[in-house]
Image (tube, rainbow, N blue to C red; front, side, top):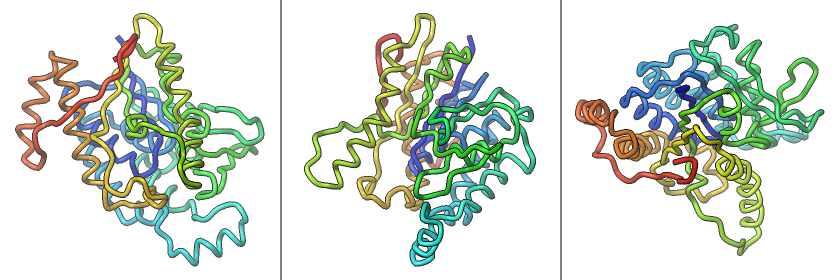
Length: 304
């Protein structure tokens, strides 16, 4: 059995992945390979460097650090001046690069990871999904998380890359292609939310964007081959304000997202991996800062 972690994109909602990771480590489910997109590339990189429970504290510090607030938190007149000058983006990529380097280390390459790791970005010149699994890590992760209009494209070897979520937001198929047979999908919760026909102008873009994000994952789920098991971990639900256009930069919800995702994922694992239930239950009992697990989410078929 080859255990794969798939970490999807989703901006600030990616904080749920930290809670999911904690539940997985509590249940002694450790990865043999990791693939990630956008914020999932960032979280996944930290785990690839240190696939042990101690990485959770590292990620919690990163998510709650001042540098995290600087990624999208600049004063809006400054953002508008940057947009007027660049004509392409609002934000400075330097804080995100700093956060990446803080997590993986200066000058690290994919060869330095403890488990195989790959990240997805979208090439502008080739209009193509591109996977990075060798060479410098920081540039590749930055490329994977270069949200169009928010951040500039990342230049690597003469080619420009934007956020991997444009082409493969939850890269399940890539984990299967790389040999994973027991897969844990860490998704930010959007696929749990039903879509309906738009009723106002802002809905039109949102619905179109969500369809473009979700259809690839739905197809990958339908095509899971025999002998591969997929666990889609529950996010614990959306937070107040997630429907707002500015939700992507609201870091006030980070801790709550981690806690609710931990509770939901721990409950899911207890139901679906009974052999790991005792270890996870003991870990929960030792943690007085969290409530009992609530809810679970799964997708059935060849995957569960």
